[in-house]
Image 1: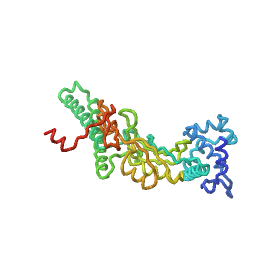
Image 2: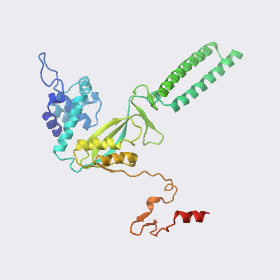
Image 3: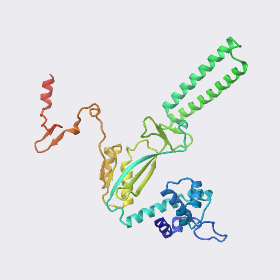
Image 4: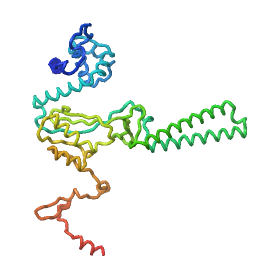
Length: 339
């Protein structure tokens, strides 16, 4: 907390664009923006995102009470500060990265890149694809057929279905038809655009698969570049790409610009492997270390794949996992043997 206190006190509030740093002719706000910025950083470091929880922490947590000088803003003041000063907070993050560069914390130039799925406000039921729309339409059609069958039964034998029940069935059928018309409009909108998904509440959110088997989340794919030695975030970017493929070059360039290293080394998992992305990193002076994904099913079936065979460049032969030299056969010989 002492580092946070010194770092915020050394910042120039006017340069960051924080309102209320200088008193106006009509007075000044109740809390200096530096105090609210310290609360924001405290919540970020301790994974306290709710403004109401930060209000309680400012009243009960001794550590935060020391940091703010026993000032305790209410949750609305904290939330408004976070909402109104997004640009200033981003500038503060850049100042922190520059400070880390001056302290030579990024001197090794080794950066690890990975993505995390963050849930959006959009509910899964408000996210639509062509397949989801077709499945939902089939379900609604099945419901309509079931209600119509009950109405036919009521026409044949009024004693089976009461008139009140028949009226409710007609209302349900009307609501289902309205839902089907809405789905038809969404499908037309989906076909008129190049997007494969449409999210009604949060338009930029996308449905993404997670590490849990068979589960998905409607949200964002946040790409983060972290220094391998000190575990400090060098650069980050919020994307709506469902996979990490295609994000390597952009994140590697952002990490290089932030760290200020002439030729950094970027580490990533096999989900980032793409030939063009690795070539872009090489052209930008970045050494990308990405494992090649497994494309053969032989390993899962208990058989050896080509990675198990070691190439001996001196004798121009391959050695099998048992250490024996593989027999060389030309394509012509193999064709003759098959014939």
